[in-house]
Amino acid sequence: MLAAGLALALLAGVMIGPFPMAPGQILRVLAGQGGEAQAATVLWNIRLPRVLAAALVGAALAGAGAAYQTVFRNPLVSPDILGVSAGAGFGAVLGILLGLPVLAIQALGFGMGLAVVALVLGLTLALRAGGQVLALVLCGIAIGALAGAGVSLVKLLADPDDQLPAITFWLMGSLAGIKRIDVALALPAILAGLLPLLLLRWRIGHLALPEDEARSLGVDTGRLRLLVILAATLVTAAAVSISGVIGWVGLMVPHMARLVTGPRFDRLLPATLLLGAGFLVLVDTAARSVALTEVPLGILTAVIGAPVFLALLLRRARGWAE
Image (cartoon, rainbow, N blue to C red; front, side):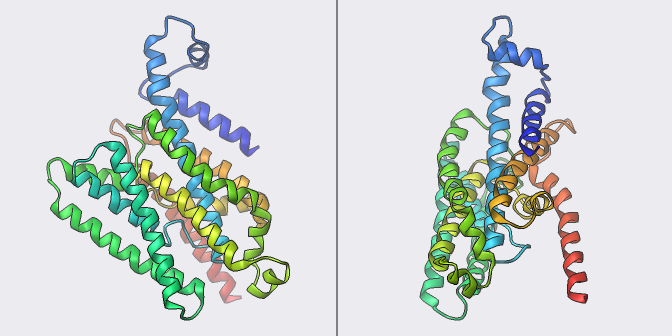
């Protein structure tokens, strides 16, 4: 059902937009029949790259969120907990300030996101104090705050007429202007991160158990946790580098998937990937259709995600009260 829903979302994403396309028209273009030059340009150069990018980014952020929530045993964890989104954002806005081309901006954002998480892991190993997970989260919050300060400094130095609007729009998340080359560059990194999560999803589910129980089942929790963090960081950095900072997807989509599959990670992860891909395709379709001016994705996901977050808090509060 989720796969069928994703297929319908992809079809809707291709059909709906400033240049609407009928299913028959899409089939003729895909079949290479003549007389559809304008439709072919829109489909191959604009619509398909954008829809595929939305599906990739949605699956990446949702899958990373599910992995992080399992690793940290916390349902309120999102993919930016270790500062990867803040680091990627700092790299991208720095590239905009320096006037770099689009591909260089994406590469700098991707590299800076990975560098921030590498710094967080290095600091955690150097501290060797308290629980490793707690130290990791605290270091991620601190380094993420520094990256956020760097973003603010770049915005202060940017040209208010040209660079500052571009920086602000990028930080709100958008897939406007996405090209086939962007999808081709992000796809290997996202697949390289999602593949180990999918192959090891049965073992990853054991990380939700207490440490002693997971080890008694033969799981090397330290090594597996590090692998999951690296894989989830890789897909998050790749997604943020092409889409900007899109919040809430990694937090709420795994909870939506749990309503379908339950808490077992081996079932949760595939459902989360499909649901995240379809969700962001629909959100992106709405972003370019509901108004004359395109609405940034971060605004729409926040409008949907904030009520979900409050519902989670209320649910946990009732559990504490009981």
